[in-house]
Structures are given as structure tokens and as C-alpha cells.
Amino acid sequence: MPIDPTAATTATAEVEVALHVNGEPRRLRLEPRTTLLDALRDTLELTGTKKGCDLGACGTCTVLVDGRRITSCLTLAVMHQGREVTTIEGLGGNPEGALHPMQQAFVDHDAFQCGFCTPGQIMAAVALLAEGHAGDDDEIRRWMSGNLCRCAAYPNIVAAIAAAAGR
Ligand code: FES
Ligand code: FES
Image 1 (cartoon, protein in one colour):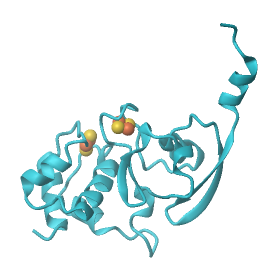
Image 2 (tube, rainbow, N blue to C red; image 1 turned 45 degrees about the horizontal axis):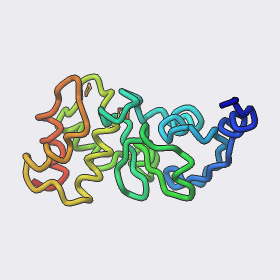
Image 3 (cartoon, rainbow, N blue to C red; image 1 turned 45 degrees about the vertical axis):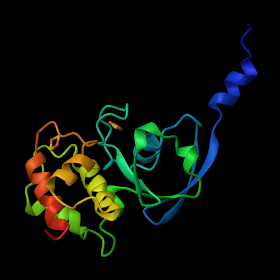
């Protein structure tokens, strides 16, 4: 079958994508194939969200979309028109620089070593609390199992989440 050059051009043509990111409306021009992760990191320069595997396996790219956690490397930005995206930069709220209680719990419990996985861990942990999955340590481990930590800070991560849950 001959290659249709028009189709190739259309596939890479930029489209307008309107998102709410950390409470602010943002309009981007992106190729339709752009992942939400790349839009956040490369276009909006919100580099707090990390790219680990880029395959949906490590959880380090976790962000919230309309309050639900997703792996931003596995979804296209264009699929989230008009939605509210929250990254680690937007978690603390005002005043600027204030820590979210989950961030403070991670600090208090020394729940990181190199810190590369930490933004994703914290975003997943915030969602986990909202989902009501922090009943005990086993439940926390189960519902955080999509977030890997190469430094194996798992005991401290569980302790931080348990503390943020008020246990
Ligand atoms: Fe998205 Fe690993 S970078 S799951
Ligand atoms: Fe290093 Fe988790 S703190 S990968």
C-alpha cells in the first residue's frame, strides 16, 4: 500500500490542548502523540514529575487528574482537555512554598534517599488517602505497590503515609 504523505503530516500536526494545571488555565500547542508527562516536563517546565521507565511500570510520573492518580507517561495530553491536573509543584497550595501534610510527613519520617521516586510516591499517597486505602500498613503497601523505590525506602514511606492518615 503506498504511503499517504498527507496522512503523515496530519499525524504530527500540532493541536491546541487546554488544561488546568495546578489551578491555572494553560493552553498548549502539542503534537497529538505528546504524553501528559512530556507536556508537563518539556512544555510547561514542571520537572517535579519524574520520568523513570516511561512504560507505566514504576509510578514515578504519577500526577492527579481531577483528583485521581494516573501514570502520566501512559496517557496523552490531548485526552485531558479541560481537566484539572495537579503535580507535586501544585500540592502545597498557598502560601507558596508551604508543604502539603503528606510532604511534611515524608520529611518527618525520612521517607526518601535519592528522592527520584518521591514526587510520584507523594502524589500516589495523597490519592490513596482520598480513596480510603490507608486502613493499616498492609493496605498501604498494597495500594502503593505501583510506585517503586530503587532506594527501598518502603518502611519509611509506609510510616509517613500512616502518620498522614492519623495513625
Ligand atoms: Fe511513568 Fe514509570 S515513568 S510509570
Ligand atoms: Fe531513591 Fe526512591 S528514594 S528511588
